[in-house]
Amino acid sequence: MMFGPRLRLWCILLIAMLIGVAICIRWLDAPIALTFLTNSDRLSGLGTGLGTMVLVSGEVAVLTAIAIVRMMKGNLAAFYKAVFVACCASLSAFVANDYILKFIFGRQRPVDFLQAPTTQVFHFFQGDHQTSFPSGHMVMATAFAVVMIRLQPRTRPILIILLCLGALALLMGDWHFLGDVVAGTFVGATVGFVAAELWIEHIKHHSRT
Image (tube, helix red, strand yellow):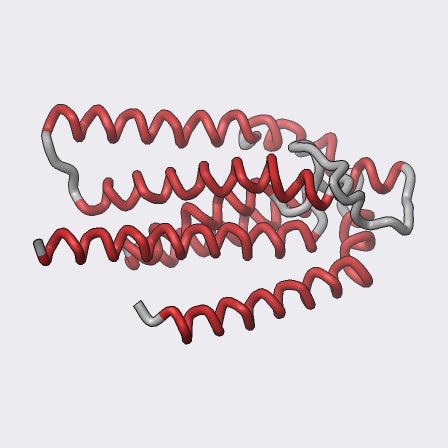
């Protein structure tokens, strides 16, 4: 793999993400959150149906089912291998985000912030898995989508549409600030791309042996 150009591209995207998050924090996050403040109760059912426990349980169930099929049949189609890698990447990214990044940044959720606004955006090393930055849902979804798009390109249109709808839902439900969604997308995309590239290298290695 050509790590040089890809690393430079990643650094450029990192800088773009940081600038985007700064712009969101300065001018966009609070106004957007205020716009959708009354939606939190009306969309509570959606939040429950697509909550963290449901999504994590779903991915674990998919992994278990694919593993059982693999043990029974002795092989898997390329699509299901891609799904397996995507779920592993998604769950790994979610755990790292919720128990490391969120702890580091400690940003309040929109509903908590708007009840008692403060000039302090981040409460460093005071967060937990309930805090807001980066968005765990976007980390999970983007990691999964990037792996699938890289390994199964025909899934690109539907996954991009679903990612956009998911990001919009997080904003409309006032579950996350826009900056949280931007950062979560970047983190998830990073994990997904690395996982997909490692899998591709694994396939290439075994095809040569």
